[in-house]
Length: 160
Image (cartoon, rainbow, N blue to C red; front, side):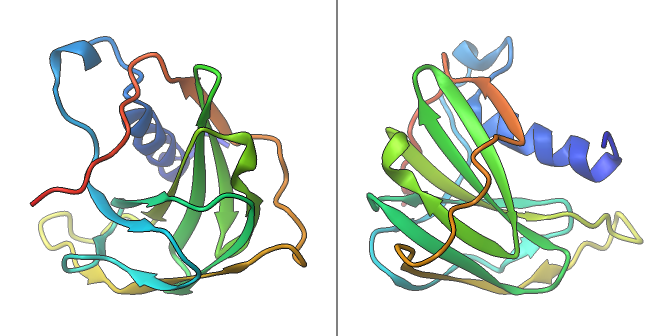
């Protein structure tokens, strides 16, 4: 499906991977909201997320974990895993279970997949992510939705 929403989701993952020709010229990554390092409830650090926007969380947990998104139906949760020179992106939708052990670096991306009715008046959407032990859950489909080169990938860092 090459809809506008899927094209923007793909672009958001590609920007996370820094898989574009001019990446070496930019000393920047996408904004890191927070580092998820324990089960519990996590949320954004600013005002939320706007339509077609994306927020990124590093996942500093090893093993199988369940991730549940609590927010509007237009929001999607993605797992981004980096290993062996590649970034793999898995669409979890509103939630799912994922084993992080196969990756050197893992992030969650919250993506707001609706376009605003008025592009000059975007609104912020609130959400929470609940992280729990996933050993009893069924792992998400292990076929990536998208994959990109990680040749220029840089781990995200908290700012300020």
